[in-house]
Length: 307
Ligand code: PSU
Ligand code: MN
Image (tube, rainbow, N blue to C red; front, side, top):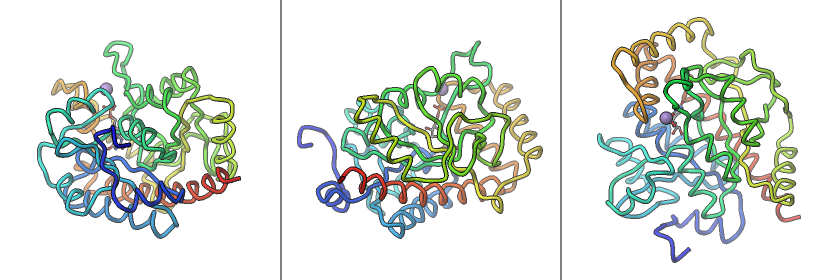
């Protein structure tokens, strides 16, 4: 690890050395996914939930010329408050280190760094995917490509309907990425529990997920896995209300000619504002739920590894 420009926090260092369960966390969700001060509350609460469920949290970001795996409270606050944090996908990791900029890692960049230090499980809210009209814009999230190349398991609440979910699922199939429904056989869509997409794979048992991870390692299949964990019933939002809000958000983004890496943060912000915080509340609840499931999975995974 000495050769890499990476600083591990003390707890992460110990967890890696003692081979105890660890869960990686992204930081774009803090800087670009939620408004201050809810974002810092989320970042701290997620870490607490992971600890309470028996694992070590490892939030990842780039600061002062280093990748940091495991952030101090001071660094979490810097990411949450700072106005000009860069959204770092895999493409941007090297340049943000060299330029000593402050960067928050997306799902793709977080996966890549987690794999580099030996963390196999990662919790977040939702992943990127194939955007609507991707046939014209070519906008396909790097998250999907990273999932096709990096053997990390991502626990999320599915993907939002700001994306073309059918195309996203086809892309994942082509790229050999399993989408495992946890307690569901239908793809959850973030704020809501259902979609019209039936999943090929589902389980009610996290030990089975850990066994699938182990089997892939044995067979040298180095692709990622998505564990799709639906938002709890009591936290879910009304489907038609969210469909309408998302449609409005997409229209607004188009009229303002928003594109590239700005589009996802733009849509998220619009949705939070238009729903009077209801979307934010749902987002917090599902992230907390994912953190808990990821910590439980990390425990099974560790036991399985030791066998
Ligand atoms: N979806 C969310 N919240 C987020 C993101 C996605 O509900 O914060 C962030 C994640 O960091 C994800 C990134 O990796 O957006 C995807 O961006 P893009 O669509 O530009 O690839
Ligand atoms: Mn994109």
